[in-house]
Amino acid sequence: MRTSRESPRRERVEDTGIDIEPLETVVRATPRMPLAEEWATVMAASGIGHRLALTSDGWAVVVARDDGARATAVLAAYDEENRPRLRRVNMPPGQSFIGLGIAVALLLLGFFALTGSRATGASWFERGSASAERMLRGEMWRAVTALTLHADLAHVLGNAIACVVLIPPVAQALGPGTGLMVLLASGAIGNVLTAFVLDAPHNSVGASTMTFAAFGVLIARAIIARWRDEATWRRSWVVIVAGVLLLAMLGTAEGADVLAHVFGLLVGAAIGLSMSVFRPHPFAPATEWGLVAGAAAVVLTCWWIA
Image (cartoon, rainbow, N blue to C red):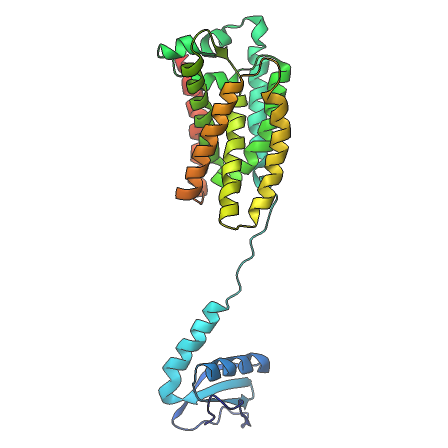
């Protein structure tokens, strides 16, 4: 029997099998000599006496019968420690959910085609805009319905582009359903806070509060990723910089509701930060897509009430 301090001894035996002593046992066998030598090295490192026996089918690791159970456990632990890990494909932020961003953008554009601009005086704006006076009298559904209305074509186009850019990375980070629910809630809360601060006669429309919330979520996620020293934080900042350039145009344009944008960003950042800390991974796919349907139901219900 070889000790752990000696190099493995290879014994050629008959093709009929492994020639071992009565008090020995075979713990592993393989046709690959390098793998057998790797196992022998593990045995040596663990202080287990062993030898390599050459058979017609390859190499076998032989140990004393009393060491059999321990040798098997040591090799199993070695296998687990060195099991190949599936490499996660590092997709660009949001690439897998680009369709969701496009879908939301198309819905905004389609609804604008139905409602027209605010200048037309359509009843949609009378019933659904974020009128601070009406909201403070209890019509809180307006905080949601106002997110779907837009003053003019330029307004809706800017928000549609922002949705395509910002919703996919949010969905990738939080899950599609959770992401939409967070953005919808953040946008609505931003509108409510604006109404409380500005009071009458403040009246606004547009999804910009929600898109600024997406910006806030991404900032929070990038900060958490940087704090955890995750490689993804660098890619997250690429999306954030793109969002800054886009939202700078939307957020400071003439007539822009700057306070609502600020509230949307802050609320989105707060919720995004809490989600990153307390729920770092999305729900199961079925749950996430159920939440997507739930977000749509919230919007439809608010419009039904209006």
